[in-house]
Length: 354
Ligand SMILES: *Cc1c(COP(=O)(O)O)cnc(C)c1O
Image (cartoon, rainbow, N blue to C red; front, top):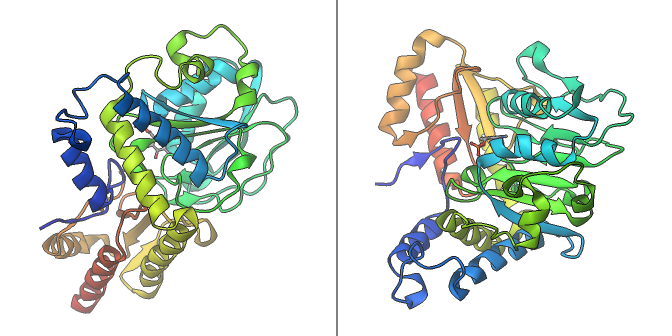
């Protein structure tokens, strides 16, 4: 039996995506060849790349004349340095909302000055800072839209008076926001999009004229754009799984529909955390993420009992990150509501036993 997979990443994809992806590894579109043995320059794969790039922009309702979409390698972690390499001339502003922001800041400092516009480090990153410091003379402002580890999320796009960049690794395509407020968006595929191995980068084309130094080809956005995201061999399987997920999303009503489901799923879980006397939420109420739900036991000494219960119900991947402890249920786009309900039932059962 398939488990209820709450893993933070790599993570759940829709069953349909798993099936179609495995079929295509054996025989792509009845071509008699595997997806992973054909040339990336073959018309079959060129179509995959083109469609994945187009559908990603369509879902975000971004104008194709204004934006382009790239599938790059090296994970979101490479974007931390790549965006600074290309665009950090003097000083950039960063909002520090946790582990991934800290890593982004560390890499940026190799290329210029970093001005921390706000930070929630004072309370172990359990909230989203609302006030940003003075943004004068910044090359760009960078945020992490959803903090996978701490379970906090920006519910409003912060005001930036320069180009706004966002690491959306764990909440891309999960909710309707005005994506055109951003000049650069990136997301590692393995959270809400596809198999690990590629990173989706959405970039405003005018940014390509703002590259501020000589950048080696593989780290240069303009090179990847000019080569249609095929400067070198792309991670074909990963890009293909992204395309399947994007098409699945489109077929099921796009971002507006999935947002409704995501809000419903997270509400069921948060309501139980708030109701149940044995659990407490980690993230500040108004900053709670609809993708990663962090919670702790009121009495840590009961951990073994709860762990045994959820394992018996075929629940997998809810161990919290070591910097928060407790539990983290990642309920990405592909997570069915039934799995969330199963977790809630286990939490109720646990309360009744205690
Ligand atoms: C997982 C994650 C990353 C790291 O992604 P890699 O693809 O492993 O480099 C970066 N940022 C956020 C918000 C994440 O959730």
